Length: 507
Image 1 (tube, rainbow, N blue to C red):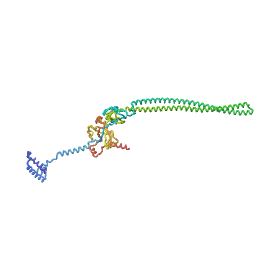
Image 2 (spheres, helix red, strand yellow):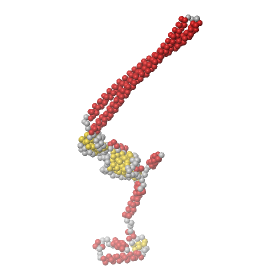
Image 3 (cartoon, helix red, strand yellow):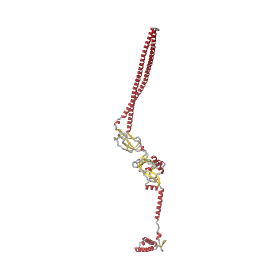
Image 4 (cartoon, rainbow, N blue to C red):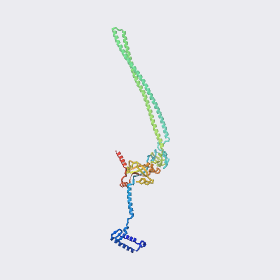
């Protein structure tokens, strides 16, 4: 009702004179109360007559209804909300989003031969002199520190000269032994020729005795035949002498012939025995000659073996001494530690001159001069199966100003391109996996990205934050995936290749 009265009051103020002053509007309270009472009466009449026709209430013309309007701000707000809903819907459907896996780690040197090296003492010794200081640049082969010997075995100053003199003596001994070996080999050759001649001579003598034995044997046979003939002749003449057909002289001659043949037989038997004994003596002489010459050859061969043993022993001593000389020479070289590569001395780990160090003591750390940098990132175990070699990566190095938009890497500022080079096959013991990212040289060559900072600004050990780029999906899908805690998606070809690898390994 008050609102109505206020509207009526404003209506009266509008229909009245427009030339009233501000002081008239601030009249007395009695006049205001009178007007409110009049308006109250009109309101009563209005609510008792509900007939409304346009701007008329009954026969009374009302301007209040025509003054009721919808505010323009509400329309504008409704239109803006509608446009916002449509724009958000279109963005969720058509705006792309680059899925990624983030990881943190540090900058490393990819080549193992160019990583920071600990210079260790190869021998126990005492520090004589340092040639460099912390932070200095060194060249390959430049002296770092000099050590002196503490092993009593190597304390002699002229030890190398003595060992070389000993080596010369052993070499001369070897030469003498070799000459002795050659002489004995020649002697053995002569003894073998002498043995062949002696055996051949005795063998010929044996053959002669065999011939004489055969001749004596034939002489015995002839003598036996002659004796038998003379016996038959004697019996025949004796029979004829008894018959008177032969004279006694013929009988005596026959007897004499028989005695002569018997004597011849006995002499032939004696000669046969002599020939047999000579043959046995020839056999003994052949065996003796063979044994004597063989004994001389064996004795000389034994001396030859002894000489050869001396040569071998001397050669072993020479080789052992050569090894000792080489070890001593290497040890002398190892007394001065040199830089294994070009680089900067990071720090010296041992105090000054006079300190004793043992073999294997770390003396200094040298960082090689190299630009073969890589990023070592650690990712979660759930994300490791989604990463494969060759995946693009965006890197943000510590101390390097950057603004990274994860879903839109193309608009990122201050990040650098990389490629996944290594994915560890096993975790680090905490369920996380290590990946190694190398610079994307192809993108740099095509001027699609800037090269990594040089090692002067990007040093090994610096922190790095990386994002492994995966597939591009709609923004709405990515929000739905995040709300449901689903893993990122993979291409169908990648999933099939991974499943194929698992099947081949299971077979």
